[in-house]
Length: 273
Image 1 (cartoon, helix red, strand yellow):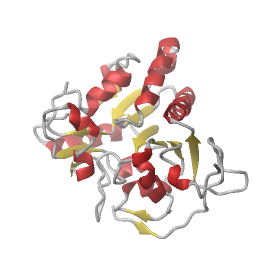
Image 2: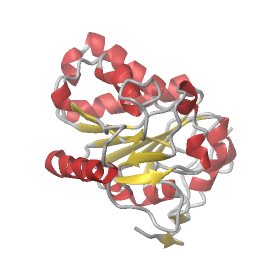
Image 3: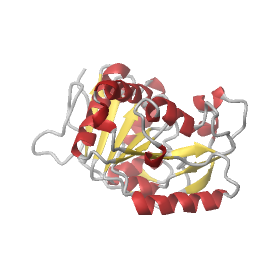
Image 4: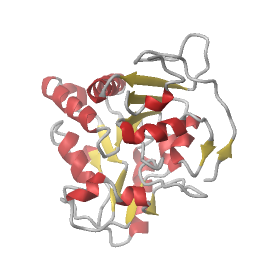
């Protein structure tokens, strides 16, 4: 999958902190900038719950990391008072570090299991995760592709924005992979905070591909903290490039971006004070 484009959608509407595209504009996605991380997480969790209400058996793809952590905690809290809301959803993990044990605290499967699967009592028949120590990584990729073909498409894909613009382990490159694949990790991924929780090395990752992501019916991108401000600014340059995988989200027809103020700090030309 190789894409370069100079397509220039209209600039985003000016907004206080929550925003839908203004009437009469053709802004290609919804941008919600909240004053802080907690408010961003509250807004995102409410949006996810509303999507589940619309589709109770939704297949939800979950990213790991700091940006979605509080959103997941809020959904877990809601599950304690509204368990029926989540009793049919299905969950698939976006990616996984290769070489970590299945119960390693840094593994993506463990993260998702602890944040949502256990609290929401999602059974094994409704939770699908990558194997972190597959005997044959290519066979594992085919297995995930086959499962997704039989159970997809993804209803709602929840993503974080990598510090180099990656989505999952779709790393910047001349070409991007369409489907599930084994990826050599970039320096940005190798220094991810999750790996600080383990003594094991991970040079490779397993991840859904860009076509898997773009074929999701809806996508939520969560962006938080000042370390992500430059990548948010870069996203809003509106240039689509495989060297900045997140930019391909401009092509998605139902994208929602939730950000806190620190992450959106370099967008002040587009946002009011």
